[in-house]
Image (cartoon, rainbow, N blue to C red; front, side):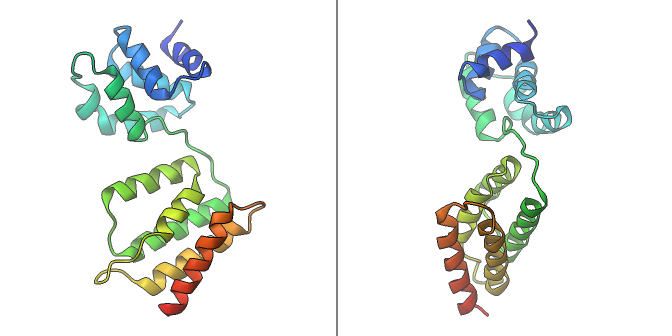
Length: 184
């Protein structure tokens, strides 16, 4: 049984990607090979898996500490290495473009927030991204509040036009409209 097949079987039995990585790594395989097997089992395209693994290779996979398989798996998962990309439709791509414009209008963003947003864009969780952005405010000196709130209003209108939108989206859209009206 090759490692990707073992990973696929382990995932099908309910294991998380982090636990699947740890199981395979404890069998004595190289960390990079184990992480790649989990990515392949999740149907993450090879080129994307390679890019993600290259980004964290030196820090996590090149020289792991003994008995760190569980920790390494959890870190790989937290970094988004095992995030399954979703193909976005035209409307969803337009929403992401609006989110990127809003991020620009923020005037700066914390790296952790940026990382979380990127993961939601990758996985297609645009509701979480929208709610996160609507709870954020542009920086006073470098942000552009009028652009920020009007862009998020446009994004919210696209998101709420979808069938059966999350009720939280409508509340967040109302908040954006109110903010846009106070920052013309």
